[in-house]
Length: 81
Image (cartoon, rainbow, N blue to C red; front, side, top):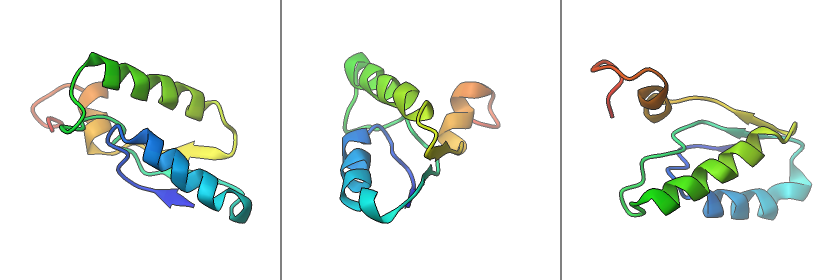
């Protein structure tokens, strides 16, 4: 199962995982975990990061980085989103 562009909508991502859980051995997230303009505020950001931390610990899941993630890891004009 491949899930792109979470953008803080991790609840929906989890719904998709649960719906297809019996059919897939692994899940690949393509990144862009943060920066959702429909869910501003620190609480939404914190909830997403708590989910991401738990998800990263699941050996059946692979997490890749994308442009929005790079902006947080390597803050520069070249990575700004």
